[in-house]
Length: 293
Image (cartoon, rainbow, N blue to C red; front, side):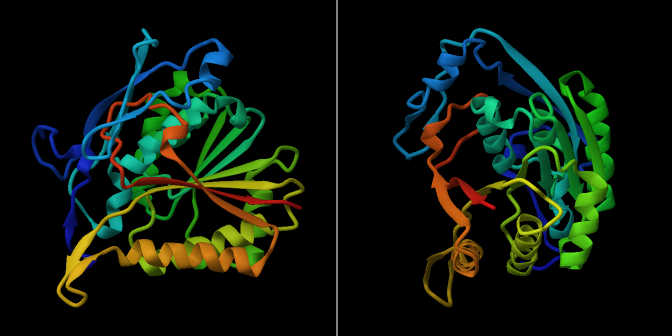
């Protein structure tokens, strides 16, 4: 795919665009509020059923209350600006955060490739601090607007700042962490739907490695990566393939080989319930990477 090609998120396929699609749109995202009872949150690991296509079906009959997060975003964009759209990988991460809200308490949450900021807003309901980052000014501006729009959800400090993975070095990462994160709390890193370009994936994993192994952090680091495996039929292989996903798998493997302190596993989507309204297709995945000191 060329950088000038225009792409549209599946989340927006059925959205009626009012006016110019190049102008920011506003979408109200409905989600079911997590149960107050902690034991109910912990006991819903089998709350999602699977339809005939293998996609997960939300089952929220036991949750009667819901709320709405309103976000600004763009519609169809070029590849360089896909962060200005809303993607299913972000909604999957939001489900995971709500289901495991206690895991985000007293944590510094650093999101890489925040885009429009939805995941950061959800994490800010539980975390000690949230730092949303992106390399594109347009995405950062939309992210800041959405955080201000949804300030009632943000129970902690939320900072929006630029971070370019392609410019990251061990030294620059250390300076960034010192300037933006408190070393008194463990760090949880979130990455949502950023696996679509091999060069970008390489830069992402270099940045993750620099952050996790930085001497600036005095606590263990946990990384969560959500993605959607996008299949394409190519004449070259005469088969359905996903080269970007295969490259992501190679990067995971290399990360585990370079330092035995990295522990990598896939988290089944059936392990956490669906709170947000979207199609949780079978191609959505969530990965956990832990780095122990």
